[in-house]
Image 1 (tube, rainbow, N blue to C red):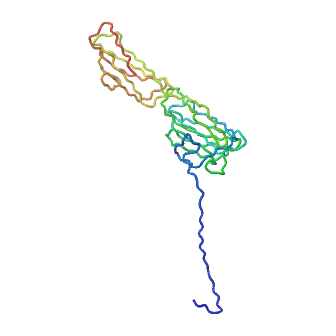
Image 2 (image 1 turned 180 degrees about the horizontal axis):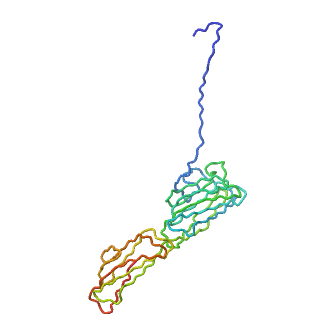
Length: 297
């Protein structure tokens, strides 16, 4: 391009700049994944925890409601963790384990005590260890559990059993730890379980009897436990010697000399279910021979 003398030209200069930066790494969220019992850190955290001088003291208590609990219902544990010193408890971890006969339902933090918490380890219906921990375990520079503060955690399980009526659930596999505090082990928390319990009784219609006579037995199944039945229950009877089956009410399943009733109607506390069966006494019989009928459950 030719420029005439004395002319003024303007130029627009465009400079392209490319800015590049790297986002800080963010730890994975507390997903429901197994947690090794020998590791103070969740299995999905790859950092390395270091012990420090033990300068703080933790205390740990737990309560359970309801007590007693019905088999099949939810049992809620409330864990109270207190930092008893003025210094912050760094990288604090609380671990709990589902007691025998229970499965995990849910967990939460009711009161963080001034700390930010993460938690995970189990999905609903699973059994095993569950963990809560303060954010400074995965985010250096965050705070742990402040001095003279208390955190309140909740751990909910479902009682699946089976448990005998008034059997006990034991929850003693829980503890708290921090990088600058000694581990504190929780005391055993016991909870009674309401469950059905059964007693059996039997009566015969006639005594004495003669050969060829029809004999009717009545079996009483009584729920002596502290919970109405919610699942089918079974009565099994073996016919006594010197007899032949002649019918039952309600109808039983017959296999040789064995009668089986499967009952599904709820049986309330203190209530009884009745089944009857009839036999014909076969000949020959010795005078005074007892017919023993004690094989039923």
